[in-house]
Structure formats: C-alpha cells, structure tokens
Amino acid sequence: MEMSADYSSGADAATGRDVRALTVLGLETSCDETAASVVRLTGGRAEVLSSVVHSQIDDHAAYGGVVPEIAARSHVEMIAEVTRRAMAEADMGYAGLDAIAATAGPGLVGGVMVGLSFGKAAALARGLPLVAVNHLEGHAVSARLGAEVAYPFLLLLVSGGHCQLLEVRGIGDMSRIGATIDDAAGEAFDKIAKALGLGYPGGPALEKLAARGDGSRFDLPRALLGRKDCDFSFSGLKTAAFRIAQTCETEQDRADLADAVQNAIARQLSDRSERALAAYAETHAHRLFVVAGGVAANKTIRATLQATAAKHGFDFLAPPMAYCTDNAAMIALAGAERLALGLTSDIDVVARPRWPLDEARALSDPSHKPGRKGAKA
Image (tube, rainbow, N blue to C red):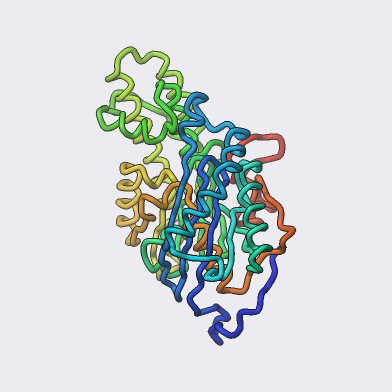
C-alpha cells in the first residue's frame, strides 16, 4: 500500500517535489546479490555515499545457475553485515537517514522477503519512513546515478530476467512499448553459455569467449521479422545455438558461436529499439535513449545500441558499469525520488514475485498469456 507523507516544509510549490537533500538507505535482495547503499539526492543530483554488494556467485557456480533457496539463506546470513558496512562506509548513523528503501519485487520471492523484512524492522525501530521499490524502477533510474538525467526518456531495460522498452516520464510514471514474448536477452546469454560449457555467470564468460571468435561462420535465426511492434523473442535463437553447440569440436568453434550469438542478440535489440526510437521521435523533442540492466554491461551490446541511437538523432546514456548489474544504489535512488514526491509505503506492504512497471498495460495487454511461462516482466 502506498501512502502520501507530508513533506510540505521542503516541497517546491509548483511541483510538490521535496527539494531538500534526502538521504536514503537502499536494500536489494531480489536475486543473488545482497546489497546495501546510502544515496543522497539533492534536487536532481544523486550522490552515492556507499554501495556494498555481496555476490553469491561461488554459492551457485556448482549448479550452473541461481538456486532460490540457497540465495534466500545467504541473504539472511549477510543482510545485517552488508547493511552495517554500507552505513559505515557512508559514515552515517540511522539518525542521518530520511528513509529506508527496499526492493519489494519482482524477483525470487524468498530473497525479496529477506531485504524487505529487514527494511521494515529497521524503519520501525528507527522511526523512519519505509519506501517499497520496484526492482525494475531501480534499473530505470540507474542511469541517474552517473549523470543528471531529465525526464522523459526512452528506456531499454535488458537483463537476465527482463527485456522491455519503456517510455519513462518520471518516477512511477512509465509506459511499456515492447517486451519479450518468451525469454529475456540475459537469459539467452546464460543458457547458451551453459550449453558451451562456460562457467556461471554465463553472460560475461560468453562475451570474453566471443572476443576471439568469428561469428560470420554461423547463420542464426532472426525472430519476429515483419512484425510492426517493438516486442522481442529469443527462444528460437537459444534453441538454434544450443543445437550448434552440440556439434562444436574445438575451442575456436565455440568462440565463433559465442560471437555469432552475441551479434544476433545485439542485432535484435537494435532492430526492435530502432522501431521504438522512430516512433518516440515523432512525439518528443527531448531525445534521450537510456539502456539499463545487466546486459548493458556488454560492450558489443552497448556499442551497437549507441550507434542505433545516433542514427536516429538520440543522445545515448547507460549507467556506470558498477550500476548495470543488481545493486542497492539504484534502489536507494528510486526510494529517494519517491520520498521527494511524498510517496512512502505501509508497513504491511508485501513482497511480490511479479510486479510490472506498467500495471495497466500488463492487465489490458499481458505480454505472457495465462498458462505460459516467460520472463519476470
């Protein structure tokens, strides 16, 4: 439940936005990173005072992917210490905070519950407002951690569990333009990397292998050709690459396939984004294309999308590399922006395994029909 808090003493009369410096502790536990961060928001400028991330890569490596129960147990073990370190690095006591923000979904619900419950307890104990944050909204504002970015902008959110294009008009005000109808791009990276015998996490390992390859050897399928919308599909690519991987006999074969896969994913992201850019340019004078999420850390993907943006006269922006993958600084920033608008959460707010950014569109035009599995979006 969202509540409006009274911050009128520091609010701008024209916008209702709090213009005081707001300092927020953010907590992130939606997948396999336990993270805490302190961010100070002054006007439109965000300052990261601390950002601590405890990775669980070693815990899950033997399984080739994230095991939800192992992830949740690790969050329970680490959340207090990670938060203590974030507060210490920020040289901050709880008395210096204006609020506590915690991811409330979407994600692995056992993990989400850990961070949200810790945030609730800390907020109650210290008498601070609680701000429940949509993990995807955190990614949506993450580019603002590295630069002062004005709304609105066109966003490509591309990660292990999500792939969607959104018009971002402001915090809590986003419209879905396109989304994956099956797998996310990051999932395709990870699953194909696993088929190639690469370690976990697969995306960075595949990128490293692709640097030594010649992708022109393999002809991979292109999905959704001829469709006029901005949706994505990666399941066909994943299946084709998996079959080819079974025939690879040498390290060079594997490198060539990795390069072909990386180029195919970059091409589809560019093709579908190009449609969105063209449509967006017809109605918006402020032309900014933001790419966020873990896949935005891939250098080939980033360069391809930057060229696509330039082709259509858009400025291009991606978060600093440290804030592409899951982190708590983006959660703290989203929480601070919500707090500036007087939006806080009831202590009974629940953890959500699914939480679309554009809930109205998700209800009227779901990207995944009942009975079908798909990405978390």
